[in-house]
Image 1 (cartoon, rainbow, N blue to C red):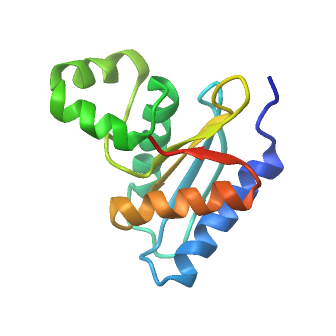
Image 2 (tube, rainbow, N blue to C red):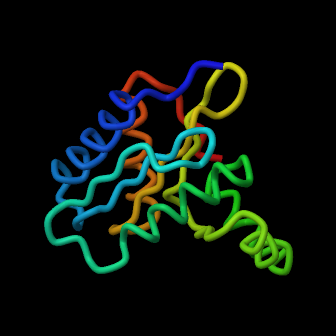
Length: 141
């Protein structure tokens, strides 16, 4: 399976932040995890509020750990709150709101992007823009 490269991860961070800046979004934190769940790249706009980075990582971690975008995790949290609460103990921090997007690969996810700082919908839009700008395919799910 091809691996997410550092260049691709850094491109996602830069393009996501540019997308936000061009649209007048609040300052964002962007985390890119590889398929193992390891942090590959991170960036935070000037003025990002405290702990946005941890929230961004939680969105990406939940997506890669559960194999679905954080939007779907939000649905799971409503439908099966005890399961999602238990999943935190198995896979670590997860944030079940939009903004965590899987990066699709031919044989499974290449990684995930998590973004925090704006509305969840705008966080997700910035992630989608960053993934597309890197020439990769998103699975917001």
